[in-house]
Length: 150
Length: 83
Image 1 (spheres, rainbow over the protein chains, first blue to last red):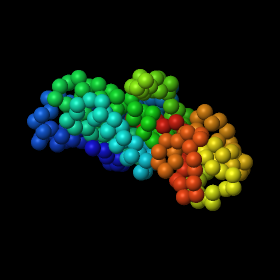
Image 2 (tube, chains in turn yellow, orange):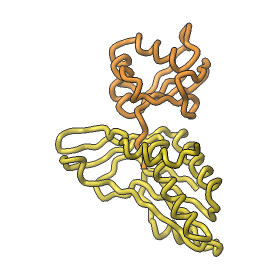
Image 3 (cartoon, each protein chain N blue to C red):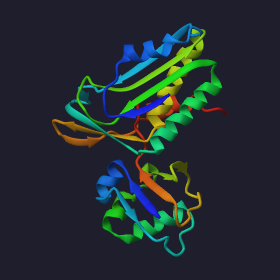
Image 4 (cartoon, each protein chain N blue to C red):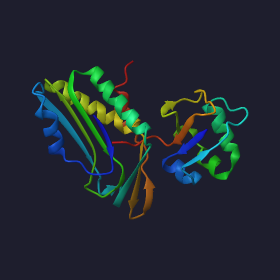
C-alpha cells in the first residue's frame, strides 16, 4: 500500500494494522527516515519536500510491485510525506512483511534505496546559511544501482 | 502541451507550469529542450547543464529520444531526492 501525505504517521499503529489479520507474517522490516538537524556544517531550521502529484503515486506503486515480484512478501507499506518538516520529523516509512526474515529485510533495503533515486521528491533545506536544494548523492546512486538486474 | 517544472528547475525558471502549443520541429525530448533553451534567459539558464536534468513524459521517466506529442504532459526536474 502506498500513501503520499503531508500529515505524520504512527509507526506502531501502521504495523499493528498490517499484522492484525495476517498471521502468515512471520517477520517484518521497518525503515523510518527522519529530518536531520545538520546539513554539512549548517544547522537546519526546516526542510520542505516538493513532489510531483500523480507521478509520485505511480512511481511508488511501481516500486512496490517490483519488490513483490522479487521477494515473497505478505505485505508492503510505503508512506512518504511532503510539505514543510522540522528536524526530528518523520519523512518516510517503509514496512515489508514476509513469512521469513530474509525477504522482508532485503526488500526493505531495496525499497529505500530505490525511493532515494526514483521517487519524484525534491528537498529544500532552510539552513543558517540560507535555503539550499539537496543534491542527489553519488552514494545513493551506487546503492540504487546494485539492485539493477544485469 | 503541459510543461511542469520541479525543484530548483522550477525555482530558476520562475514558474511551476505552463501550457504551450507543440512548437514546429519538436518531436522528442531533445528537440523540446533545444526549443526551451532558445526561448529566454530563465529557461536557458535552468536547462544549461543537461547532466542534472531529468525528464518525465506523461508521468513516466523519459530519455532524450522519447517522442513527444501535442497533448503530452512533460515535466523537467533535477535528479530526485526521495526517502
